[in-house]
Each structure stands twice: as C-alpha cells, then as structure tokens.
Image (cartoon, rainbow, N blue to C red):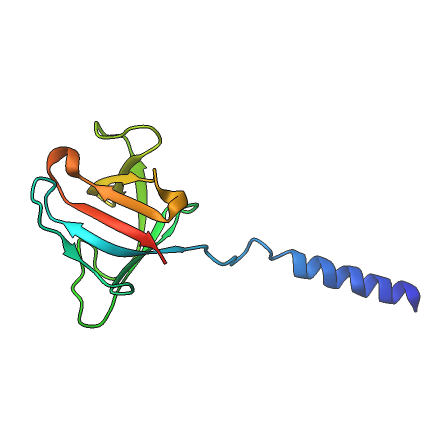
Length: 136
C-alpha cells in the first residue's frame, strides 16, 4: 500500500510539473499614453487620462497589446495585440532600439526612465511623432 501511495504521489507531482511552461501566463506591463506629439518640431501635445489609451508590453516575448477606452480614438495602432521587433536605425543610441510593428517603423523605444515607470517612443530624430507613456 505504501508503494502504491508513493507511486501515485510521484505520478501526480510529475503530471502537475509537466505543463509548467505550456500556457504560462504572459507578463504584460501596462503603460498609459500620457502625451502624443504629432511632430517633434510641433509644440502641440495631445494629453490623455489614465486608462484612455493603454499599451501593455510583454518585453520578453516582444508583444504589445493596445486598448482604447470607449469614446477615445486610437493613436497609431488600433486596439489589438501585435508582435513587435526592435531593429537597427540611425536614431538608435545606447540600448534603445527602433520599435517596429510589422513593417510600421513607429519610433525609437526609449527605456532610459523605465525604472521610474516612464517610456517614450519617439520618431523625433526625423521630425516624427513622440509618444510618452507612464506605467499604471
């Protein structure tokens, strides 16, 4: 009987561990869009309330989920989940790389203030838009 209990316990433990990596939850970090500047040379900013537009990043799997509150208009990406890549560009510096969703080169993903809960996506080096995000 003891051997049977031990065997059952071992089988249950192995079965529960065998799927640890399968279907593991994705770890998204949500960032509220705080300001959007359509052109780096244009001093006009659009400001947003928390929860109005949220881009949630899974940095490990290079996925971004975009959510737009009812009544708000999407900026650059429609609501949905997208794979992204970080690519080389003349605007890159330090560890900051250019953020692409498919063939859309959105801007330089600037992580300099990540520890403070801030990230920026800027195409400002060629007078493009600048997105400023703050962690929820």
